[in-house]
Image (cartoon, rainbow, N blue to C red; front, side, top):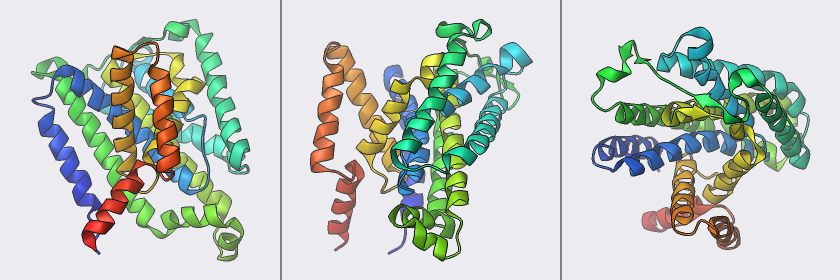
Length: 314
């Protein structure tokens, strides 16, 4: 059967782009946050396919946001593409260095060690007065491809469009990678590392490479979030933020590159409306959602769509 994923991804991106012109501002914001979170979780499903769960991806989410946000106050540059490039470079460099240590560990040891690095960054940022300490600071974008942001009729829609573009590119490249020989080794590593080694592949190198990819996607998501919201603070690297990414990963499942965006949208929708109409019990509602998914859809929400799609094609 021909793979239709590229068509679905492109169709969804175009649909969102046109829908953004008629949606209310709150809905555009909700969609933007969902796309940013989905980009981050897109990288996390790559680790899940390796049999790894990161409880510290807030580290790269935060690094990407701060890399983008500090360009203007410290370097005098607020070009959007430069901000994204800075986020990619910094997260790739840090992940490459930490990857030499993390690739040696599995299971809970990998999860807790990644969490430790995330909390170290939280502590450093919270004590740094030059970066706003626990309050953080505002992020500004002055130009996009050299064109002043104020020249656009609706700057927020332009940023929404760029967020869609970033998510679309990330999704397309990730799907291509997962279909490659190296990408397919991820699930083989999860099932039996020893057999993969016997095949001549270096498991540690593959995990290291996948970890860097995952970190870069988290950095892109963090930079896009900082640009969209216009503010960053150390809470972005706190353990609860990383927990949200894990929540979405479990909620969505790892069966498709589309799943993280679906999971992120459902998560943000439930959280936003639950917090609006039941501010004292919204955590309980998220917990109930998680329990329902784990009990009835242990492979995530995408497994339900996969079953429906299979029945239609039979």
